[in-house]
Amino acid sequence: MTYDAATRVATLKPNAALTAGAKYTATLTGGPTAIRSMTGTPLATLSWSFTTAGSAVPAPPADTAAPTVTARNPAPNAIGFAVGGGVTATFSEPVQGVSGSTFTLKPGTTTTATPVSATVTYDATGKIATVKPNAALAANTQYTARLTGGTAAIRDMANNPLGNVTWSFTTGVAPDTKAPTVTGRSPGVGATSVSRYGNITATFSEPVTGVSGTTATLTNDTSRAAVTAVVTYSASSRVVTLNPNSTLPANTRFTVTLTGGAGAIKDAAGNPLTTVSWSFTTSR
Image 1 (tube, rainbow, N blue to C red):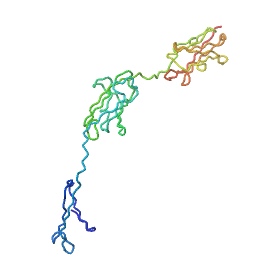
Image 2: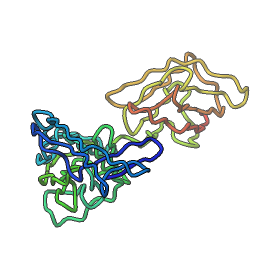
Image 3: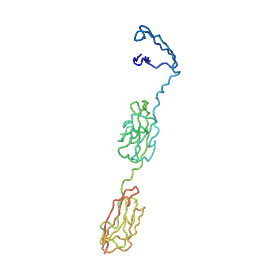
Image 4: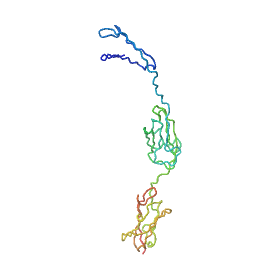
């Protein structure tokens, strides 16, 4: 019970919520030793009744539903997963407890394998956990992802634990990052007494693209002039051939150049050939 002398308002604040739909009576008791004016005149005792609302506002039901995993990438038993990709899991509701010990990735299917070194993150907005390996995964290898639930592991905001979730997938082939090379040349490097009538050929280590009259050239070292030639490439044998349009002059040094680059000779994955040059000398 409080009383504000400035406003002359008395307030009775119940210590607990009143019962819904119940009738209550408030009483102000006056008297020489009860409520009275400052000059001692007693208040006439006053009572009035009221009834609370007919039904109480029900408390929200307690959250007892455990979170679940609604999506996984890669999917269970997927094959051909990119060796540089991140593994993700999407939850049905916001969770807590996602860490490097509760979201792991291991090679094979055994639980005793050492986890892959990785960075684990959680996007609360999207409800997505990601384990991103710190290095590319092995190609054509099976891996197992595991989400560990528990009151001290992955759980929702009401501490309902996730049930453990485990799934496996297999990676695909490693990306081609190896540049093509020249494995054979005719005439050979520094060859002498080379036929003035023959063709010049080079064999690549793998199929390539970008072979043309501007990326496979022949130069007369004496005159510094380019030798016109028909340039052909056989994808099946991986051989480029330069067929000069005229007989080469005798006892002359020539240089063959195969130009590599993003816009020149490269393999199917776009790895460029390192430009290769070599020389030979024709016969007398």
